[in-house]
Image (cartoon, rainbow, N blue to C red):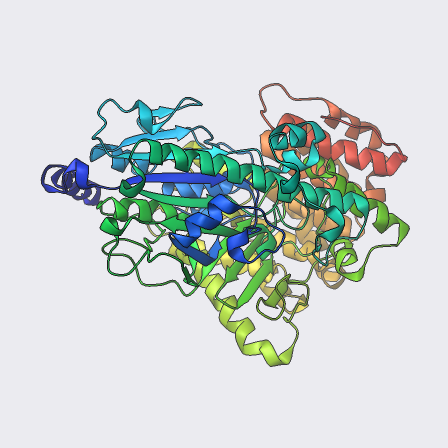
Length: 628
């Protein structure tokens, strides 16, 4: 009924609303993998005259953040206005299913007469409905609309500054070939973040980042010039933004400001400004999340925001009140899981590591190809890294991190254990837990269980939205917290092993395994029993716990069986545990070789399981074999 009412309102807006020629055009200039390394953000090394001019004519947002440190989860949220952890698009390289009631927001623009184009990146982690765009291709352009009086929403995506533009010398040279000598950077003159070693290799990557951004600025300037050529500049709202932070280690894929703080510049022609918003040359510290972009575009076009949308319009008539917090998550990055959540206000960043026994720099094929990551590993093995960089090779992570982002802009001084910040820690922790429960964070459900439930319910979004599931949501969230809360949580974790929900039992087994030394005296029998659980994810978690308790005998057979006969993500879960247990896996090393075989029909998992097992075998056998 709510959707029907909304559809009627949209129809009325189309009939009785503003005439087409009086509705703003909206142009999005989207780029990849850059932090605010722009002149208008005060960076002394940046060469970005076009974006700087846009900021002089518009508004610069100093506190804009994405919901993840990697592109596809962010882009799924941008196009729907929903957190990736709500929609089920949180794992990098997954394919979720949209429920019927949730649509990419350009559909609502099209329903009211907008011509909508995308040139041309999607990467939403779901198959968009066919009516999302009038045109989504490399030829898509506002110039192709059939009636020149028709308002348009056009997205152009610059992919040249993607991390591959830094890692690949060939791509870097191609993207920057048009730069003048005066637009080149002196690598020795740049200032590196403290979590990088100061070497020529790292400086070269940092230099490439700046030059790719300058190439992007040329691209943006060309599109702005096209607007002017068409006489549309003063009828078009321009939004410039990046999908996440710079494409280098400890930035891309991570939830610090280096991975989630983005540039956002918006120019609103005077005729379309509401009150004094969009006043030229201004800066605002209003907190903005990337899931707010779509709702804001709708409001600027005079369209009501659908009730299911979690993002908030921050411009236009009827804009929401300013946010107190923005939120984000890290989940599976290609072949490695690391469940992390964050909350950011204007000053502090809180991070909750749900898997603190994993090192920061888990080995992942894609980022390991980058020169800076290789340099980090080389210097770590030589014992020559500075302390801020070496900290990311620690075998474990703190459960909680808290940073004063004003005093510590690079977030290297964790205040979580400082009594002087106890009140701030509790406030941010509470905000995080409220968000997890209110948004129905399905990222706390293991991926194999998500897939099982999706097959029954039709989509991931519905998993925690069945009638009467409030208790289930709370039990999953609370047990996931207990799993890293220390030995005092063990009695509750043992009770949770009997929970009717397999996701709760999973976290119970994970938590018992995390505290193996304290639990082995009374929980071994319980874990052995859970090797026969109905859920593969629970069986694998119990096997991990037994290995950590020093009782791997029965567990190894279960892990090999799950790795070789399980479903897509069940196999990956088991392979990761076999990699984590190191020497304990040696008795089944020959069986592990089965994991080097690609599994037909298993999409990404075919290579992800192979990557993990290859790494495990390399470490056990002292080899250096590579896989794709």
